[in-house]
Length: 68
Image 1: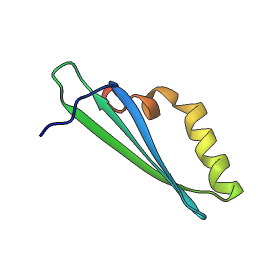
Image 2 (image 1 turned 90 degrees about the vertical axis):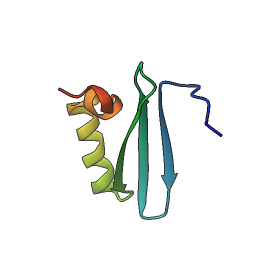
Image 3 (image 1 turned 60 degrees about the vertical axis):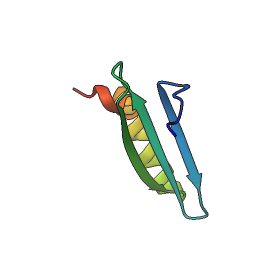
Image 4 (image 1 turned 90 degrees about the horizontal axis):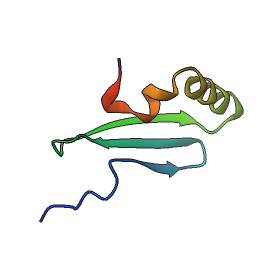
């Protein structure tokens, strides 16, 4: 049984006490889905580092199948 693709791009987040894990899935026009996962600390330093990555390269983080 195959899963029906509802959204072309989506993110799953798993929150723990000391870290957050996120997985972004992106499906292309041919129906092939690629996944990019990242894990980062929930402590202030880790959250600030993650924020800087998102600000610096938002397109790469949120569009894993379309990196330059």
